[in-house]
Image 1 (cartoon, helix red, strand yellow):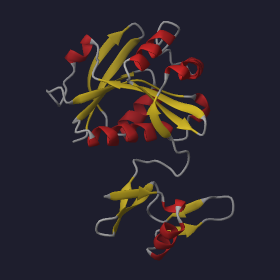
Image 2 (image 1 turned 45 degrees about the vertical axis):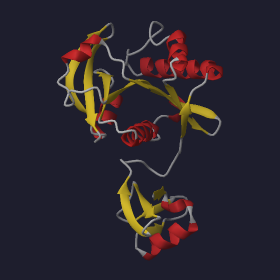
Image 3 (image 1 turned 45 degrees about the horizontal axis):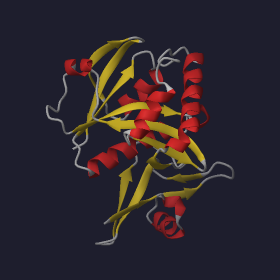
Length: 229
Protein backbone atom coordinates (compact mmCIF):
# COMPACT_ATOMS: atom_id res chain seq x y z
CA UNK A 1 0.00 0.00 0.00
CA UNK A 2 1.40 3.36 -0.99
CA UNK A 3 0.17 6.67 0.36
CA UNK A 4 0.92 9.80 -1.67
CA UNK A 5 0.87 13.07 0.27
CA UNK A 6 1.89 16.64 -0.47
CA UNK A 7 5.00 17.40 1.57
CA UNK A 8 3.58 20.55 3.09
CA UNK A 9 0.41 18.93 4.45
CA UNK A 10 1.98 17.12 7.40
CA UNK A 11 4.68 18.10 9.91
CA UNK A 12 6.14 14.57 9.77
CA UNK A 13 6.62 14.87 6.03
CA UNK A 14 7.92 18.41 6.31
CA UNK A 15 10.63 17.37 8.76
CA UNK A 16 11.56 14.36 6.61
CA UNK A 17 11.78 16.57 3.54
CA UNK A 18 14.02 19.04 5.37
CA UNK A 19 16.29 16.20 6.47
CA UNK A 20 16.48 14.91 2.91
CA UNK A 21 17.31 18.39 1.60
CA UNK A 22 14.10 18.57 -0.44
CA UNK A 23 12.49 21.49 1.33
CA UNK A 24 13.53 25.04 2.02
CA UNK A 25 11.58 27.96 3.44
CA UNK A 26 10.89 30.80 1.05
CA UNK A 27 10.89 34.51 1.72
CA UNK A 28 7.75 35.84 3.44
CA UNK A 29 4.78 35.88 1.08
CA UNK A 30 6.45 33.64 -1.49
CA UNK A 31 5.16 30.29 -0.29
CA UNK A 32 7.38 27.27 0.25
CA UNK A 33 9.80 25.60 -2.12
CA UNK A 34 10.92 22.03 -2.62
CA UNK A 35 14.53 22.22 -3.77
CA UNK A 36 14.95 20.38 -7.05
CA UNK A 37 11.63 18.64 -6.63
CA UNK A 38 9.00 21.20 -7.60
CA UNK A 39 5.73 19.64 -8.81
CA UNK A 40 6.46 16.35 -7.08
CA UNK A 41 5.08 14.51 -4.08
CA UNK A 42 6.56 12.25 -1.47
CA UNK A 43 5.20 8.70 -1.51
CA UNK A 44 5.37 6.70 1.70
CA UNK A 45 5.10 2.93 1.31
CA UNK A 46 3.31 1.65 4.39
CA UNK A 47 4.31 -1.96 3.79
CA UNK A 48 8.07 -1.52 3.64
CA UNK A 49 8.33 2.02 5.10
CA UNK A 50 10.21 3.31 2.08
CA UNK A 51 10.06 6.82 0.67
CA UNK A 52 10.26 7.97 -2.92
CA UNK A 53 9.72 11.12 -4.96
CA UNK A 54 7.03 10.91 -7.63
CA UNK A 55 6.25 13.34 -10.45
CA UNK A 56 2.78 14.90 -10.26
CA UNK A 57 2.56 15.78 -13.95
CA UNK A 58 3.34 19.45 -13.44
CA UNK A 59 0.76 20.14 -10.75
CA UNK A 60 1.44 22.77 -8.13
CA UNK A 61 0.58 22.77 -4.44
CA UNK A 62 -2.55 24.86 -4.98
CA UNK A 63 -6.23 24.04 -5.33
CA UNK A 64 -7.19 20.42 -4.62
CA UNK A 65 -10.37 18.95 -6.06
CA UNK A 66 -12.72 16.31 -4.72
CA UNK A 67 -13.97 14.18 -7.62
CA UNK A 68 -17.31 12.38 -7.64
CA UNK A 69 -20.37 11.66 -9.80
CA UNK A 70 -22.64 14.59 -10.53
CA UNK A 71 -26.29 14.45 -9.47
CA UNK A 72 -29.51 15.64 -11.12
CA UNK A 73 -29.94 18.18 -8.31
CA UNK A 74 -26.70 19.81 -9.46
CA UNK A 75 -27.79 20.22 -13.08
CA UNK A 76 -28.45 23.99 -12.73
CA UNK A 77 -24.93 24.62 -11.37
CA UNK A 78 -23.35 22.28 -13.90
CA UNK A 79 -25.14 23.93 -16.81
CA UNK A 80 -24.20 27.37 -15.51
CA UNK A 81 -20.55 26.25 -15.49
CA UNK A 82 -20.81 25.37 -19.18
CA UNK A 83 -22.50 28.67 -20.02
CA UNK A 84 -19.69 30.59 -18.31
CA UNK A 85 -17.13 28.38 -20.06
CA UNK A 86 -18.70 29.09 -23.45
CA UNK A 87 -18.65 32.83 -22.73
CA UNK A 88 -14.96 32.64 -21.84
CA UNK A 89 -14.04 30.67 -24.96
CA UNK A 90 -16.03 33.02 -27.19
CA UNK A 91 -14.31 36.03 -25.63
CA UNK A 92 -10.97 34.41 -26.48
CA UNK A 93 -11.91 33.70 -30.09
CA UNK A 94 -12.55 29.97 -29.59
CA UNK A 95 -15.94 29.10 -31.17
CA UNK A 96 -15.91 25.53 -29.90
CA UNK A 97 -19.31 25.32 -28.15
CA UNK A 98 -22.54 27.30 -28.35
CA UNK A 99 -26.28 27.12 -27.64
CA UNK A 100 -26.55 24.06 -29.89
CA UNK A 101 -23.99 21.95 -28.03
CA UNK A 102 -23.66 21.05 -25.25
CA UNK A 103 -27.25 21.56 -24.13
CA UNK A 104 -28.78 21.19 -20.70
CA UNK A 105 -30.47 18.02 -21.95
CA UNK A 106 -27.08 16.59 -22.99
CA UNK A 107 -25.89 17.01 -19.41
CA UNK A 108 -29.09 15.54 -17.98
CA UNK A 109 -28.62 12.46 -20.15
CA UNK A 110 -24.98 12.19 -19.03
CA UNK A 111 -26.17 12.06 -15.42
CA UNK A 112 -28.96 9.61 -16.23
CA UNK A 113 -26.32 7.34 -17.81
CA UNK A 114 -24.17 7.74 -14.67
CA UNK A 115 -21.28 9.07 -16.77
CA UNK A 116 -20.89 12.68 -15.64
CA UNK A 117 -18.26 13.57 -13.05
CA UNK A 118 -17.49 16.77 -11.20
CA UNK A 119 -14.47 18.20 -9.44
CA UNK A 120 -15.48 20.17 -6.36
CA UNK A 121 -13.46 22.93 -4.72
CA UNK A 122 -14.93 23.83 -1.35
CA UNK A 123 -18.65 23.93 -2.06
CA UNK A 124 -18.34 24.92 -5.72
CA UNK A 125 -18.19 22.78 -8.85
CA UNK A 126 -14.96 23.71 -10.58
CA UNK A 127 -14.68 21.02 -13.26
CA UNK A 128 -17.06 18.79 -15.19
CA UNK A 129 -16.29 15.91 -17.53
CA UNK A 130 -17.96 12.85 -19.01
CA UNK A 131 -16.33 9.44 -19.31
CA UNK A 132 -17.62 6.52 -21.39
CA UNK A 133 -16.86 4.39 -24.44
CA UNK A 134 -19.02 6.36 -26.85
CA UNK A 135 -17.40 7.98 -29.87
CA UNK A 136 -18.52 9.51 -33.14
CA UNK A 137 -18.23 7.44 -36.31
CA UNK A 138 -15.35 9.67 -37.43
CA UNK A 139 -13.26 8.14 -34.66
CA UNK A 140 -12.98 5.11 -36.95
CA UNK A 141 -10.55 7.12 -39.09
CA UNK A 142 -8.04 7.49 -36.25
CA UNK A 143 -4.81 5.51 -36.27
CA UNK A 144 -5.32 4.28 -32.73
CA UNK A 145 -2.49 2.42 -31.03
CA UNK A 146 -4.94 0.15 -29.25
CA UNK A 147 -7.10 -2.00 -31.53
CA UNK A 148 -9.30 -3.46 -28.78
CA UNK A 149 -12.16 -1.92 -26.80
CA UNK A 150 -10.10 -1.56 -23.62
CA UNK A 151 -10.28 2.24 -23.72
CA UNK A 152 -12.39 5.10 -22.38
CA UNK A 153 -13.27 8.41 -24.01
CA UNK A 154 -13.27 11.82 -22.31
CA UNK A 155 -16.10 14.15 -23.38
CA UNK A 156 -17.15 17.67 -22.43
CA UNK A 157 -14.24 18.48 -20.12
CA UNK A 158 -14.84 22.01 -18.87
CA UNK A 159 -13.24 24.12 -16.14
CA UNK A 160 -15.22 27.03 -14.73
CA UNK A 161 -13.49 30.32 -15.73
CA UNK A 162 -13.22 31.23 -12.04
CA UNK A 163 -10.95 28.22 -11.54
CA UNK A 164 -8.94 28.38 -14.75
CA UNK A 165 -5.15 28.88 -14.84
CA UNK A 166 -4.75 26.97 -11.57
CA UNK A 167 -3.72 23.60 -12.98
CA UNK A 168 -7.13 22.05 -12.39
CA UNK A 169 -7.42 20.75 -15.94
CA UNK A 170 -4.18 18.83 -15.47
CA UNK A 171 -5.26 17.69 -12.03
CA UNK A 172 -8.46 16.34 -13.59
CA UNK A 173 -6.56 14.51 -16.34
CA UNK A 174 -4.27 12.96 -13.74
CA UNK A 175 -7.26 11.84 -11.66
CA UNK A 176 -8.91 10.27 -14.71
CA UNK A 177 -5.70 8.51 -15.72
CA UNK A 178 -4.99 7.14 -12.24
CA UNK A 179 -8.58 5.94 -11.81
CA UNK A 180 -8.64 4.18 -15.18
CA UNK A 181 -5.27 2.56 -14.54
CA UNK A 182 -6.69 1.03 -11.36
CA UNK A 183 -9.60 -0.28 -13.41
CA UNK A 184 -7.27 -1.94 -15.91
CA UNK A 185 -8.02 0.40 -18.83
CA UNK A 186 -5.22 0.60 -21.41
CA UNK A 187 -5.82 3.91 -23.18
CA UNK A 188 -7.73 7.18 -23.09
CA UNK A 189 -9.20 8.83 -26.16
CA UNK A 190 -10.60 12.30 -26.77
CA UNK A 191 -11.05 14.94 -29.44
CA UNK A 192 -9.76 18.50 -29.21
CA UNK A 193 -10.79 21.57 -31.20
CA UNK A 194 -7.89 22.69 -33.38
CA UNK A 195 -8.70 26.35 -32.62
CA UNK A 196 -8.38 25.88 -28.88
CA UNK A 197 -4.65 26.37 -28.21
CA UNK A 198 -5.07 26.11 -24.44
CA UNK A 199 -6.61 22.64 -24.58
CA UNK A 200 -4.12 21.47 -27.21
CA UNK A 201 -1.18 22.62 -25.12
CA UNK A 202 -2.53 20.87 -22.04
CA UNK A 203 -3.19 17.57 -23.79
CA UNK A 204 0.17 17.63 -25.57
CA UNK A 205 2.05 18.35 -22.34
CA UNK A 206 0.18 15.50 -20.67
CA UNK A 207 1.29 12.98 -23.28
CA UNK A 208 -1.69 12.79 -25.61
CA UNK A 209 -0.78 12.12 -29.25
CA UNK A 210 -2.70 13.16 -32.36
CA UNK A 211 -3.85 10.05 -34.24
CA UNK A 212 -6.28 11.57 -36.72
CA UNK A 213 -8.76 14.32 -37.51
CA UNK A 214 -12.52 14.77 -37.50
CA UNK A 215 -14.61 17.50 -39.10
CA UNK A 216 -17.80 18.52 -37.37
CA UNK A 217 -20.13 21.50 -37.37
CA UNK A 218 -17.63 23.80 -35.67
CA UNK A 219 -14.65 22.78 -37.79
CA UNK A 220 -11.63 20.50 -37.44
CA UNK A 221 -10.88 18.49 -34.30
CA UNK A 222 -7.82 16.39 -33.53
CA UNK A 223 -8.41 12.82 -32.42
CA UNK A 224 -6.01 12.16 -29.54
CA UNK A 225 -4.91 9.15 -27.54
CA UNK A 226 -2.78 8.34 -24.53
CA UNK A 227 -1.65 4.84 -23.62
CA UNK A 228 -1.70 4.41 -19.84
CA UNK A 229 -0.79 0.74 -19.46
